Image (tube, rainbow, N blue to C red):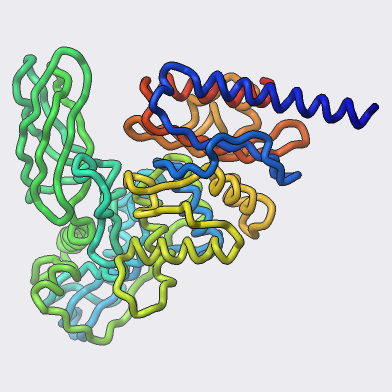
Length: 479
């Protein structure tokens, strides 16, 4: 009798879950939508309920879970990026007869707003180290050596509307200020063209083709469009009228060259003369002017540890950080095959998870951040990944704690706020046009669940879809 009662309770529970899922799937906004969903009991390795869990869908930023989990597994949680100052030639009578190099390893955190680093202080420390090396004049240039990665800063699968935007900066061997700039405008009466005031950081060589218009609606539907390395950006769309100062954000077209220029300016402001203009490895290679000579080390700067970089990546959904991690993973690709830095990272990621026993046939990656519409994931793969990272990974703690708590932190600070899940759920969110996704961990009493839901092509607003997913998760867990 007790066995029968247990089976009956289990059947009723399963029917209840199915009913909740049916209500979600049959909502008017879901007509024409695709869903991949799974709720899994990690401790017992049991799938409680799923729907089309092997359907390959566009995951948006949930893809960052794959990137960050792999980075922690392969690089270790205390890995740090190193940026070094070096010089070639020789020093005589306080003059460097040669070049001064800033050598990058792909660090995305240099002068990043996410770590509250004082860039003026950092530049001052670099200048001091040059002076301590006995250098008061440089006959050559400040050279940015960004060659650890290739020159493909952005994925070839990104949309045109993303190129030039603040959320889609290229990722390079040298990065600075999150590879972002702020453009300040003054907007006057409606249907007029805003006046461009300045950029921060200052970039006098950057040309803006201004096609913006102003509107009384108060809405911002503006775009900053431009290609990597091009000193030209086009401004389209509408911004609010009657603003004395209004700001838009875009990308820095060539961060390594900007860093070389910035450091060169700081040196000269400190009365260390630099005879030649700043340059980077890309421009030198195009001019066939690379002459590698023996270098001497002046200083090495280290990034925060990887566990902190991963936490920022998942908390803020930082695209630059994620792509830098993917390319760093790709440095372990050791064959002679010619591949992009993106593709090398993808090859290593798939190989790693195949070795761990996960089926990667449904994993399609073209970047590390999830911005490419050709990226594909399934709820089944995500839950398998989450389960492995919790139960088997030596860096489990760092990974789990990199996911923000719902209702409290990061990109899910407004998700499930005030519900009891606020105390027990850690989720990574993802969103793009008509795409919404969540994945992570939920604790309930002594139970631990992995959950993943990816929804594509829904017919409602992002906030409405978020609320529907919230109701679904709450109903499943009886909150």
